[in-house]
Image 1: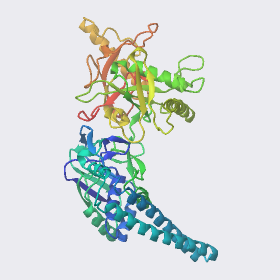
Image 2: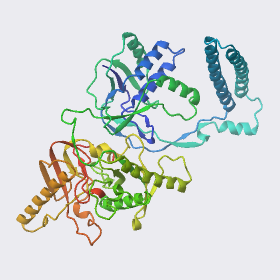
Image 3: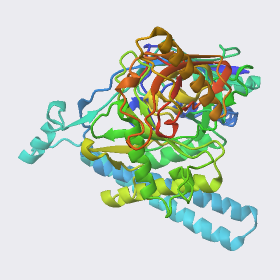
Image 4: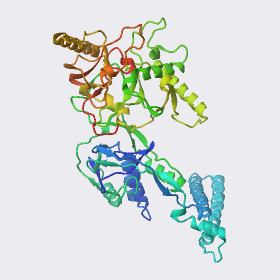
Length: 573
């Protein structure tokens, strides 16, 4: 085992998330760290071949574990900064790009010539040599043109025109146009991160890696200063590669160094670029007690939709929002809508097998929590067939395709979807793609990680009437609470979980942001159906169980949604 120790010298990390320019990345993704090491290596003139070999070896290793503390996110506000002037050397930059392309073509031609010579292909060798000679002449001409352009562009004007003077004044920062930029950052509780690999390099590789790490000064933004060194031991990791986990980080892989070199040749630090990488799921290290946690019949492979526009709605409208969402999804499904979406058989009877649940995800569990709905999640059953999974994806895909047509933008990966809520207006939802979204309550892990203690975020709609919970007779009220606890325990068995060791039915709420059960409208809304009693509860199991925990008569509409105890009460929503 060996590890890279990264110390953030300013106490904060400024690195923009790859999929959201307004959020900061934390912890640093292993691919970003490898990229920073490669950039440090390439700054040497000439770059060391021994260091290149060491970085190639590092990129080929299994994804590292990470030891990183939680971090607080700084509020992101736009800053208006002068735009760099690109007009003065515009011809020079264009000629530089042309020369770089010709140089790359020459390298390919020389490689073809060498291959032809090795295979004794006379005709192919002659053709490749002609191409090589032409490209060398072109490079000589382009280099001379580059020198002339530079001399012309940088030469002072002895008698500048009025237009030239106006253009010159525009180069001053106070006269440049300004562009809104954001600088998201985080402040980790402990400004030291370790990347831990399960292997050890040879002495020669280690020496080269030490040399590169010693020169590395930043990871992410230029203000994100670091001091790095490789060490032989490290703290226990907080995140390890786990295919069953929810957090997705970017990692390096074989060929990473060459891909970075090729990408740099294309963008020349000017054009937009995307860091080449692979994606790897990460989660907390498994303990002996949670290697195989008990699971409910609902899956943790959610499709999460975050609200991006429209009125912010209270969590008390969870069932109304999820019913509208399910209806919209069914309207885009193949006719007739499949049972996994409708929850009913062809003859109209209730489905006898688990089907899809729609869950409104509220802002709860934080001291600043408002209880507002942040988004909606599609929660499939754990035993879903491939056909049913495709039916859900096709319905969502058709909905998204209609949104692209409405916006006349075929390039949008996750277009905004309009969800109409009658008199409450229209909200827009957007599918969360890759990685963990910035809001805690939109992360699947927030609702599904194994725990022994679970707290209701939305009240449980009881399967039967427990009696009068608000009776003036203390004995009758106590009996009703005991009956409600028994009903909830049985509801846990209905979704494949064991009966809890303890069920505490509460007259109030379980955590910040949660609305009282009596604040929720009647469920179901159809007055012709029996109304369910709703209560909040705390569940304690004998051993950890994995979520989602969705119980009660309203479980397919987001009622009876529980959150594992011990979430980040100070983190983002």
